[in-house]
Length: 549
Figure 1: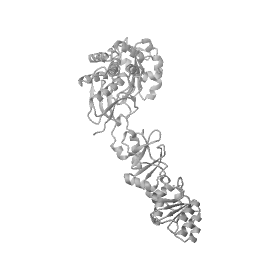
Figure 2: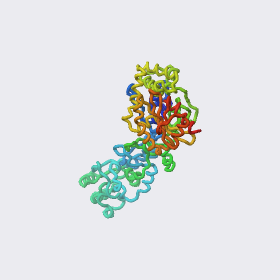
Figure 3: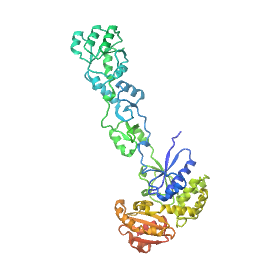
Figure 4: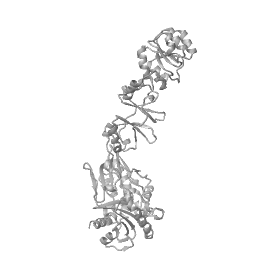
């Protein structure tokens, strides 16, 4: 069975009501058609007050915000990590890696925090590098590790919570010579020679390891208990015992703990490709924002990762799209604007119609597919059409827009005139907004030849309210224009009732160019445009022609 794909349905940056509501409506529509994929509405900017009023009115949550659609580590198929404790023996680590056919163990603490890494190569190196008889003590090797590694039985003493001390020696000499080499706390490997066992205990050895399963006399066991000496017995011979003993050392002694190469779940895959190519490890730990181990990323999983899939609604220009679109795969575009410059790697479903609102197109698609429109979705779509057409006053409004809006209003149980007034009132209320909020509430970027410019718009039913922000908006636009990287900034103060726009112009030659081409009167730095309410159909075409002339 193929894996369900998550596909984002997303509008433009600085989203308006159509952008948000159409994303929600189209995601719902696609989910009714498809049982294979999961479509989720997203947004590429903050929700403005008009849109928030609409969402609250119909009891809908705003789509989740995404600042870009670049692939992240968390989008890849992470492999389950082999989590182990730093106390695990080298031998057990080797057995685990061999049985799992893995190359790397992740050493974690009780909170799943990454402490280090242990690879097959590190295990081989640990065995080759161990020299000297004090390695077990230096590594604070637990007696439980030693017993496990040697498959030993405890004949005397308590090994609970105890670690090896002193050096390891093999008692091959006679007792007289042993007295010269054994020190207090040492671990002694020996056979069944009673005199040697007695000597080692008397010399305060910490532990005796009896090889080849030899019997130990009761008197030796009693003396060992009295002297607090541990006695272990293993079936291995002396040579194998000595060889295996170092494999009981905990991996925490050898693990790589410094300068670890790991990734975070939020890291972008394009940013880590170079690191993976340079380091060329097989596996890389992945941590979450709290530093907890999530899994392992491999070069193979990076190669197999699918790009994020998106459907664009209410725009088709790269400059207006969510960041990182070039790293994503566009599945569809549903729009009612002029064609922009979005490129795709394969043919897609692109529905572009000259209507007043994207929601109108989605309404037609519901009808064509005979899918019932729920009350809340109908309310959102009706609101989008009212907003984009300024309640049918915009020259972009078509007969189908009005038919769609009125039918959707009936489903939603609202009256369009009253709802429009409440929406526009909520959306203006300019005294409660900063200049930045006003400018970017509904702001789009365009390009004509070598000239790049941005056009913002706000609509109100109160002319005095619009006129009252001219000075502060002009001052703010002049301040921020250099920061935007745009040649010019324009801002439409649209009076819904009078069906007119005051166009603020900021930037070199912005005002004279627009005034000359449009033929509209100028007051200060404002072009007074009677009968103009549409950015898409009236203002942007005027600007494009003015800058190309």
